[in-house]
Amino acid sequence: MSATANLLTARIEVGDDGAELPLLRPTIGPAMVDLRRLYQDTGCYAYDPALHEIGVCRSTITFVDADQGILLYRGYPIDALVESCGYLEICWLLLNGELPTAAQLAGFTHDITHHTMVNEQLHAIYRGFRRDAHPMSVMCGVVGALAAFYHDGLDIFDPRHRLIASHRLIAKMPTIAAMAYKYSQGQPFVYPRNDLGYPENFLNMLFSVPCEPYRAPEAAARALEALLIIQADHEQNASTSTMRLVGSTRANPYACTAAAIAALWGPLHGGANEGVLQTLAEIRSVDRIPEILRRAKDKNDPFRLMGFGHRVYKSYDPRAKVLRRRCYEVLDALGSAMIRSSNSRWSWSASSSRTITSSNASSIPMSTSTQVSSSGRWGCRRRCSRRSSPWRAPSAGSHNGTR
Image (cartoon, rainbow, N blue to C red):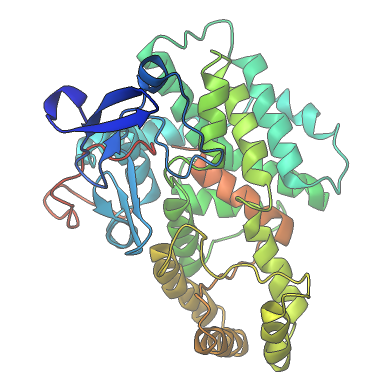
């Protein structure tokens, strides 16, 4: 997105003063007016407190078309990526701009798999928390503490050092999240296993115990991998903005990540996942669906219906279609026919009331749901080669400054 490559300009007049501002045309998305000379030429600033109409960076990573319900990672549709690629392939894609070759994926997978352990001294930090502490508070503390282990030898101006920090976060975040859950349950920590895939290892650290073998259900691993993929990036949202803002001070990357996790915790951001599960718990049975819908429509009732579409999307959240299929796979594999029937009726009832729907199901405790989102987002095996890669948008370059 280059201002010099465009001859068109936008003229803004303020009284007797005026400004000829370059018109930037991205590869995807609407054109943007370059306001960097606005004050110099007119003496006025632009005012947009929510940044709804302002782009603050150039990006070739993620594109969202809210009106059409489209989400692209590096030009690839999210549903095609979930069906064709594993989470670590998506991490490589977001980091490097292209899907990995077989050799690149093998090397990357080896690097991540063999750096999942955390320093033993971190175990003592967990004992400083209450057992009933919210897991996101634990995540903030422990991830922030990584700065104490990786600081002196870290040069944030060295691209390789930044890449190593990214790899460490991808590798260690599931371990830290699983340890927080185990601590809350009063169970021993489970060490990562190098013989398991990324989602299988995460599930093993969450649910296995020393007294018996554990094998993660295939449907659960597929669902978790899909969840991690769709949570990997979503343009310049609140947590991403937080990390960029703190990072602009040249702070330690792990401290920046802890700040981003704190933003993700909020109920209007990643914490909405927890709100969905609380809503489902409040519904309790199919018979209460009409009452819940009535309360949701009542402007005088403070009740808020959670989990029915991301506020950005005006038509349908493309991630919901993917998770809906994975949800049914899990329910079918676990034999929860009654739960599936309830979910179907709930979705149908809400749809007939013109409410945008999405479906979520998880065996992970409510307060941990945001933590799982954190593991997938801040870490940025089914093989997906270049030759069999999914359809990619022909124009997947920079867009309107979202990230």
